[in-house]
Image (tube, rainbow, N blue to C red; front, side, top):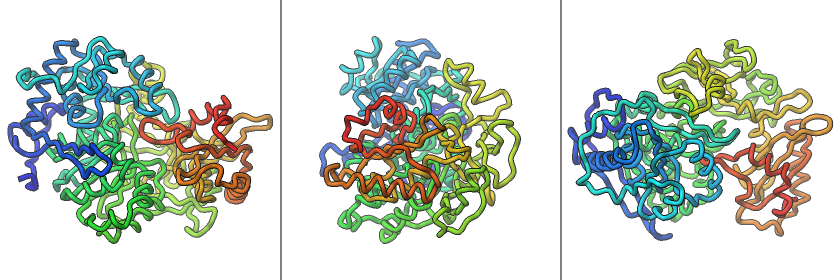
Length: 566
């Protein structure tokens, strides 16, 4: 019954209306499954909600929330990953309230961000579970535990009149987190755009994900898109993935036409950590699409993952480099499944001057990037960051986006809203990129550019060179950034060493010399400082990306001197 194609849904204004539609038309189909791993050796305990049960739970919790807050009030979701999170989010929308997707207190490294977001959003109610009730009650007077609301509380609700559905707080990779106002129309439009881009509008898929539901991609791919199309969404906890990445692959193998997304580090992590014994019973030939939304997407990541799991039937054309950001709900541009990965070797010196000129792939000064396909139901323009003039194909500039998925602005930040969202309907992303052969190529962040002697350098380009120089450098756990110096900007690299090697076992002076020589030879840049620090000390954003801005702050404050840095 679950494998048959769900009927096409009519157009509804909000996600709760879709839930109610599927509950009426396909009540016994599975809607959401959460796979829990209560023990280190657990193969997974499945908990499932059908569309009928989900609808009952959403209406019950929505009725309870309506008793606690007036329409338009903010509701902070401080639930762990799971079915209660899904129910709480959809119930908030059904009650005409504004959801603020977050996480329970105690998430490592995210305490300050949680405090800052709660202070900015000022929620009237917090939604959580019984397990976290005690610690959450210290943060807000009004708390609703999803699992304590009985089914009997369910009642029919009129479709909400509220325009804003939720506040998607940015990850904070380049600035203090800001809440993007995502309307009901935005999230429904972006869900439809994503479904179309990955072929899920024409053929049924199973959405399989471990990305946090408070993250923009996790929220849209694991909740919004399945709800709009009536698809099964299979969830697991990010921590369960980190403890044993093979768990994610087993879920991909177990479900027909699986579609999933993960950042760069996850694909590299799987390629290096999944054992031959774990691979033995994996059958990945049914995977439809593997989305990589890192910025920029490098072909080497897909190549390593493909080489590691080709023997399990993984098809190379399942890799789908994509581009998106919270201000556009999430999805902007995507490579389509079933098409070969588009690779571009670009001249590094020309790229620094704002031109995307081809280079030989084996040239040591070439930058290898993957194409992120074409826009998903929206317009993308490359413009001069200063003048705003449209640029031609092959010229590097700021990526600007226009579409029904672009958010309304930042919560309570009028000046920043005018600067980023403008008055002409174009979203100024702050990301740099170009278009070649019809493909969007993301080259980096405008604010992250390092300027030395008048030349631009992309930090992720320097970081790629550093992590390829020595095996003791932990991949995707390092930050390159500029700091003011007496004669101009100085370049600093802070890198974690691998978990399998202690600092005492590493010849740090030799590693530093090798890194300096590699960066100088490939980029013509003299590194002012190279610090090797223990695992876990380079800060990351809530989405798992390295926060160069916070790393720079900690460096300037001398925080790494006590960490055994060298």
